[in-house]
Image 1 (cartoon, rainbow, N blue to C red):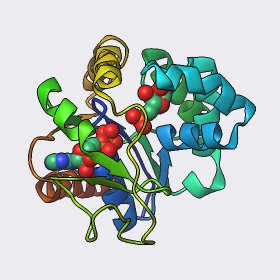
Image 2 (tube, rainbow, N blue to C red):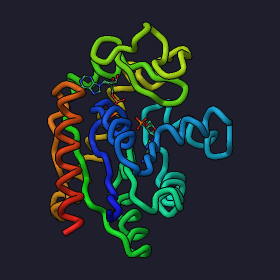
Image 3 (cartoon, rainbow, N blue to C red):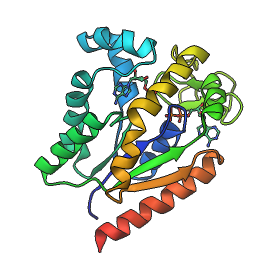
Image 4 (tube, rainbow, N blue to C red):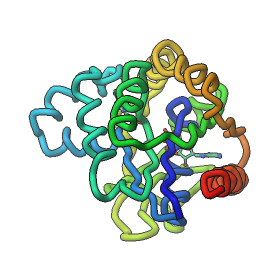
Length: 223
Ligand code: ADP
Ligand code: AMP
């Protein structure tokens, strides 16, 4: 089977992580979660983490020059040679262009940009109730609760609330999304790569729609 190279687009809280986790547990695709990589760098207090922290706490984007090489290194890596799902990258046109240039250099193509759409009012409810495990698994206190309250289903560790999932920071992140990331929708639509999903549906329903589209993309690619 040929490789499948995908990106997940959508506002913070649309369900990119929720769907990305499901998609990549069902298919052997390298899953690259930009926010998780940056949060790990902050926890480790690496040079990157120290530079990124202030931007993340403020709900702003980390500058392109810190993010682009970090993610492209993963795209070029052996683990992504059969395909990848990028979650949270690209988030600016400059990042999209850098991804295109890197793929062109590798003689590879992007197969699809999966856009999960959710209105702003819903995002605030989603992110205020989001809880995450240390390893990045995502839950919602009401919409997608863990089996045991406050504990990760897989390893039983305590779930936490992200520092940037506070109402003021959520609103800032949404305005950053509309100004800096939403232009990528047109960028991929023009090239016929965009696939839209109604992210207000239930988790399972969105997952079904995504899985159907991804299997169509595989078929197209195999022809
Ligand atoms: P993103 O990665 O786009 O920021 P997440 O996958 O972390 O978004 O989802 C944000 C929050 O919304 C999480 O708490 C998640 O459990 C919840 N969520 C995700 N998809 C849905 C859905 N279809 N319906 C209701 N809640 C959802
Ligand atoms: P996320 O977990 O995807 O919501 O990302 C959390 C935070 O990490 C964002 O609010 C940004 O500060 C930063 N971040 C994640 N992805 C990117 C990116 N592609 N470019 C710049 N900053 C990013």
